[in-house]
Amino acid sequence: MKPYSESCERNQAPILEQLQMLFAERRHVLEIASGTGQHAVYFGRALPHLSWQTSDLPANHAGIRVWLAEARLPNVLPPLALDVNDAVWPVIAVDAVFNANTVHIVSWPAVQRMFAGIGRVLQPGGVLCLYGPFNYGGAYTSASNADFDAWLKARDLHIGIRDFEAVCELAAAQGLSLVQDIAMPSNNRLLAWRKSV
Image (cartoon, rainbow, N blue to C red; front, top):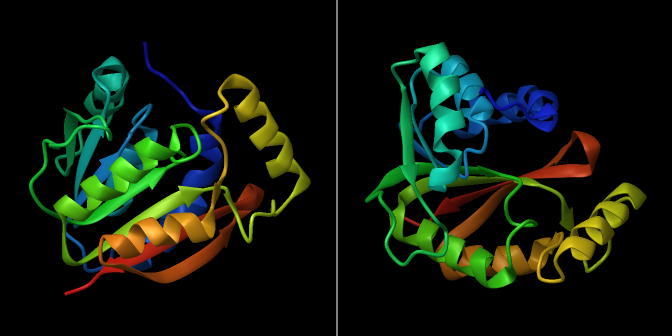
C-alpha cells in the first residue's frame, strides 16, 4: 500500500523553493528519515542534478519503495537502513543532508546522536538542511506550536519542539555554521548550515 502524508504534500513546494538555492552546487544528498518517500520523489524529480539517497528504519522501506517504483527516477536511490542512534551509518560521505520533522519526534539524546552522525558523513563544505518547528529563546513562535508541543509531550515526555539555540550548539560542535534561518508556512523553519572546510 502506498503511504501518504498530507503535511508532506503541503510543505514540499515551499521547501523545494529553498533547496533549489541551497543545494544548487551539491551532488549527493542523504535524506534522513524519508518517511513515506514523498519528499524524495518530489525533490528528486525537481532537482535532477542530485543523487538523492533515501533512508529510514526498515519498517518504512516498503512504502518508500512503492513511491520510488512508481516515479522511476534514476537519481533517487532505494532506502538504506538508518537509525540515527547507531554509531555507524550506512553512508560514508555526502555533500548534503536533508531532514524534515524528526528532531521533535525523537528524544534529545537521539537528536544529539543524529548530529554526531551528520558530522561524520557530511563532507567539508557540505550543507545540512533541517525543516520543522523550533522555539526561540525558549518561547513558542505561535499558539499552534504550543498546542502541538503539548500534544507531543502527552505522547512522550522526552519529545517535543526543540530550542533553536540548543540545536545550533549541536551543529557548531560538528563544525557546522548557520547560513540560513528561513521562515516557512505553518510556523515552521528551514535551517541551513555549512560544514567548515
